[in-house]
Image (cartoon, rainbow, N blue to C red):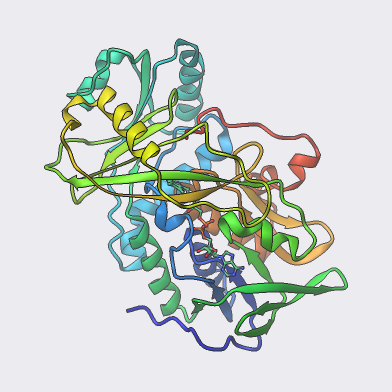
Length: 394
Ligand SMILES: Cc1cc2nc3c(=O)[nH]c(=O)nc-3n(C[C@H](O)[C@H](O)[C@H](O)COP(=O)(O)OP(=O)(O)OC[C@H]3O[C@@H](n4cnc5c(N)ncnc54)[C@H](O)[C@@H]3O)c2cc1C
């Protein structure tokens, strides 16, 4: 049991982190390691209730922008050591990621991405369709035109990761308040003064917005309009099977991804171009649809005919918090001291979260310039300084 309060909040804090997902918890933990003392995490529901507890747990370093590659690479190093660091088993397994395409026009960008990833010391290789069978013996490669494989990519169990961080936060005297919603952020004279919750007000000089798909609603409390939108994404889990699948398989053509968990289940999803892009705050739909189950099953069988007859046990949906270039928004905002964003991760916040929290905590505490945080600042949208990553899937 991790002690978490549902009582009144403290009157003061040195830092308040909003959100009990991967980003909020890693940030709180890393702020504490940077020497911040009186830290409070506020979560309106339960730990992992947002996107984190609904995600596929995939962790890959195969991206086409250097920021994403470096954040993922540094996060993978943290995942490799995470169970020991947190004293909690997070079930990180490096079975690799096999990224396939059915579209000839992707092959050039895939080869270029391998070159960039190798330059960053990520050991990705380009594969011909037949080579994929070396990695997934029963894969149907008849429609595949090419693939890339990185053996150091993998998966972790999302709930174990947030529970592990929550326990580690508790050991560092960080107060976690669940069922506690932030209703307002008070500012004056160009700086943050307090956070107003439904369980009282906390005077604080520092607020970090890690509210995931609700980040835009929270940012509006301090007068900032984020360009983020919300998108429903669905995912499913099958009955447990004997181990048969080493890597996560993902198609950059149709957006399917599937892996096998350490308990033997197939876990997978597929993006749906018919899903609306919601731009009004608090527009959410996390209902499950038969349409998803049918689309996913058809796509899975095209790659892995042996999955025919496997029983789907459960499906659910969560929200992506999507920015116009599908890359996160990190850092503070000019003219408002003490307020920071860590949001906008689309479908890759679980894999980038650990290192993002670490870099952001250091940046917030020391004020040191960080080139990745700078290139992912909110300003980039106003300055037209955006570069989309070509390997956003889903
Ligand atoms: C179906 C699906 C599959 C995915 N698969 C992957 C994957 O394989 N790999 C990967 O890297 N990423 C994946 N993602 C994306 C990933 O889940 C997110 O990018 C990541 O979890 C974001 O974490 P977060 O901590 O920023 O936000 P969240 O986990 O959403 O946490 C935000 C928290 O803030 C709380 N909150 C919001 N507003 C308030 C408030 N006012 N007061 C108090 N609390 C508040 C919420 O309740 C929530 O718990 C997937 C997402 C989905 C939906």
